[in-house]
Image (cartoon, rainbow, N blue to C red; front, side, top):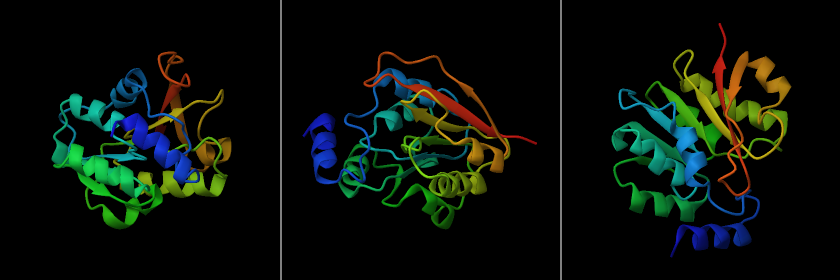
Length: 184
């Protein structure tokens, strides 16, 4: 079964878990993986989906054993385990990463659709990630909307600054990637 078939099937069966209608495109995935380097000791991807972004992260030279994947959908987790057997795949929501990880993270790459989430849920996800991240490490977030994918309240609570990519037109729908970092 292709990624698109699996994605659409899960979207129809579990619309509360799947918020996009197609997997992230290659251009957006490459932009999300841009901050990752082969020298990093540990990286987490949250909302890993079918692995498009995972593939881009690994193409950066990061060893698969240094990559933790978090995905809520069990069918996607099965696909990730088959496709990337040397990564660690957790069938858990992103905010649970604080309870299972043991390494300090050099980056968190997020495909979780945060834009329309309530502030409390955004804060739980970002707070869990930041609790595991090295100071100043990038929290990379994709969005399809016209405004930052983390609310002003959440950005202020965690003292986050950001830079954003140009709009990525070669994605369906067009996307933008934000790189957040916690300030001093």
